[in-house]
Amino acid sequence: MANIQPESVERFISRVTEQGESVEFEQTISLIDTHFEFTPTSFTNGEQENEAGTNLGSCKILAFAKLHGLSEQATLHCFGRYYRQDVLQNTDGNDHANIRNFMKFGWKRVSFFEFPLSKKY
Image 1 (cartoon, rainbow, N blue to C red):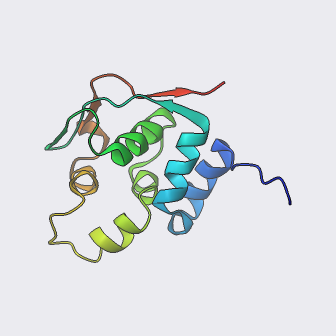
Image 2 (cartoon, rainbow, N blue to C red; image 1 turned 90 degrees about the vertical axis):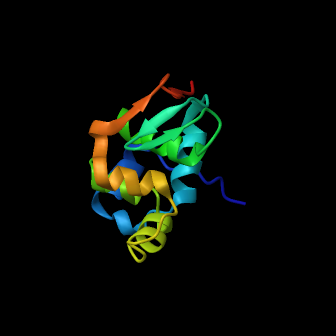
């Protein structure tokens, strides 16, 4: 059985920047969980207030993207099919509030009570 190495952060960032449609939500979360310690915290994203322990996937992705200076488009690609299918193909929907708020307000309205990620050593 081959020893499969997890994707490096640098390779993932290159992939999400250059081939964003190839990235899925589960891949993003797996990468974050592999390389970072996560502490749930409350965060604000546009008009969406998120209590600590809620919307953990959005919290992880937004923190990862902010830490690495990802563009708004690359950040949205980190949400995979939730962005591409659930949101873009249903623009009048009200699901995935964090994705929809990020599309509307971008980085200028994202803030964390405490930054939730720290690199694993």
